[in-house]
Image (cartoon, rainbow, N blue to C red):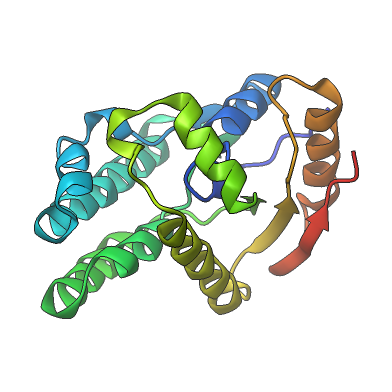
Length: 218
């Protein structure tokens, strides 16, 4: 059983299983649960059709939705109750950096830093790392029509952006990186228990990458 912690953020590339793991952890700990609102972003299907034209709109929508969710949690929730989210607010910059350039990227950063200054930081950031082939298989399996044209090279760039983020921000929050190749924590209780144990071991860790490239030997 994972002891309660104020704020755990689950991260990973597209198709890594962030939302599934967040739901499991939140149910177990009776935590508040914050989830990305992909279906509510009207610009997302347009972005996948024409990334250049719709990148700024899609990223601004995601950023403001995340900021609103976290602010509402701060204002309206019992802060003694833990929080599990399937994102960390800083991921806003990770994807925006891939999709924006020039003046749009500069503008986006200014807005981000203005919104980020009063938001809470996770007590633990858990990153699920999967091989690109598994990500593509999961994307195909969940069958969101607007995601079906995502290519391996885009997922690789996103992965590299996360790695850069971890190096730059490891002095701010504890980061647990889990190598989850072949891990099915939704349908295999032993896989889920292994992740539970890792989170329990590191939930009170100091800032930094507390367990990098931690392989699940299952």
